[in-house]
Amino acid sequence: MADIAILGSGGFGLALAMMCRRAGHSVVVWSKFQDEIDTIKRTGTLKSKLPGVKIPSDVGLTTDISCVADKDLVIVGIPTSFLRAVCVEAAPYVSERSIVVNTAKGLENGTLKTMSTVMKEVFPKNTIAVLTGPSHAEELARGIPTTVAVTSESTEASNYVQNILSNDTFRVYVNDDVIGCEIGGSLKNVIALAAGVIDGLGMGDNTKAALMTRGIKEIRTLGIAMGAKSETFAGLSGIGDLIVTCCSMHSRNRRAGILIGKGVDPAEAVEQVGTVEGYVCTENAYALGKKLGVELPITEQLYKILFEGVKPGEALKYLMGRPTKNETEDQFLVRNSF
Image 1: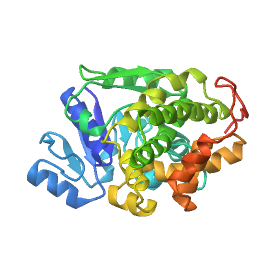
Image 2 (image 1 turned 180 degrees about the vertical axis):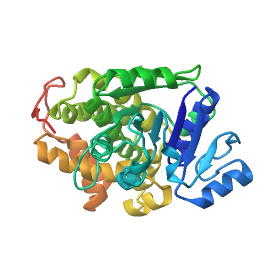
Image 3 (image 1 turned 180 degrees about the horizontal axis):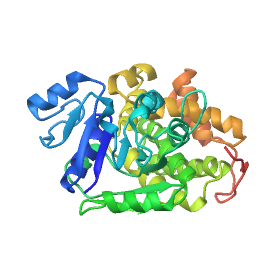
């Protein structure tokens, strides 16, 4: 049995807590919001995050961030915009022996750093791992079979996380490509937001299939430019996560995109849906592509829809009218360290 602390009482944090508790581990969830803790303790549910899901009473709940002290795993389930601040708050209490596991998918505003890079800066003495892949909280919480990947610069840490978290409804694979896994998990939110726009415009399966296929090519292009391995994007953190996020109504990115495709102002659509990681990540990925000199046409057009007022139909028309090319050619790939 492992002793686990989870930072963040969002849907995924609570779902992970339930999964870990079912597997026999000791789990405590930290929330910044006392009202969320009170609601769960009073009703056994948190309808705003996991509607219809009963949260077991033996899952610990607290607003005291020192709960991370002396844990085997500290799992961070915080949206990217707030991750650094929460980690800084937790850092004084995290034991050096603890493996700190990131589940957030995105790039840091301004610095364009991956979340594991941010966490290495905040926890320089700890081993950092990343848990990523196709894993909607709504299904994970219900014990629906789910498969993800864990990656770390430490193979020992990856193997430990795999052994601790794997059970009869949650299967964990080890992947040794940290940057590839993080870029796959981050950029799939961008493509899923675009997929929602396609749905909102009333386009068909052909259009979405094209978007997803060229989308994974775009994700791979950026990943390779950052030093990732090409094969990673054919795996769970690449095409796997892309499929589930583009095709499911559990996906907030897709739901926000549908509203935008139907004519809702992008900022208003995000406000209606809630946390939409693809909205912020589009801006950051667009900037990162410019910095590395790689061509990201879908990301670029989505950026223009979200932040420059371009109409979705015009962006789609532009993408369909781009110069023709060979499907397998690798253009504009620049290998850089980042």
